[in-house]
Image 1 (cartoon, protein in one colour):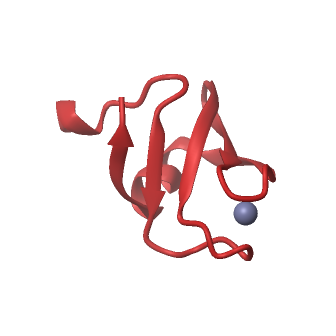
Image 2: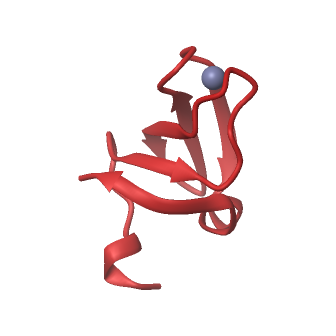
Length: 63
Ligand SMILES: [Zn+2]
């Protein structure tokens, strides 16, 4: 794993695909085996497998 892709709580990440609300950025609100993400557009929360997050994210936007 690249150090620049290391995720921390409250990081904002950009996904390759937009959410239903049109927003591509999500805030990390819980880190574990699964990662809990909150859409910065509509506030929708999802749980995602850590590996899935790395596959689906485009880049980290904010530390
Ligand atoms: Zn959304």
